[in-house]
Image: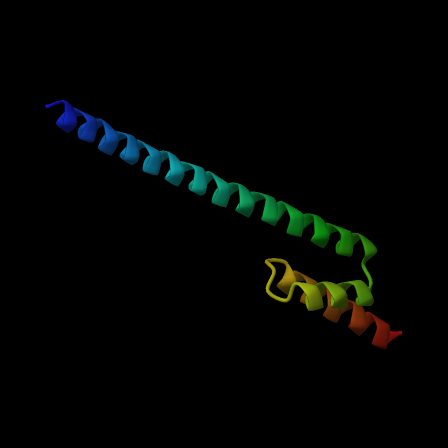
Length: 86
């Protein structure tokens, strides 16, 4: 009887640990995504502040698939057009 009770307690502890571990992993993933996005936004803001062709080209070279790449491409085309127009 004592052995059965110990086994039940052990199984419950294992389930509890798994649940806690899943929660921790979930939290780590969410935090990584949040901080990753904030970091990319700050990089985009810096390039936007510089606002020149070379800065936009470097950004696209480093982060071609970023969420800001389309906006950077649009600004790059605009600046190159303005340069040719002069």
